[in-house]
Length: 59
Image (cartoon, rainbow, N blue to C red):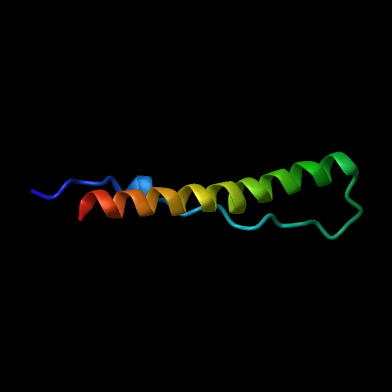
């Protein structure tokens, strides 16, 4: 019997942050940058690690 992996574990990461077409104050810039990094950087590395581990365990 093959182990079951819930599809939600393999959910895709968020997308790039939409930058408004106006002057962006420093605090908003920092918030948007942090959100972008969380969506793409941290989530991407986590998803890669999860996928690698799950594929190895399901073999």
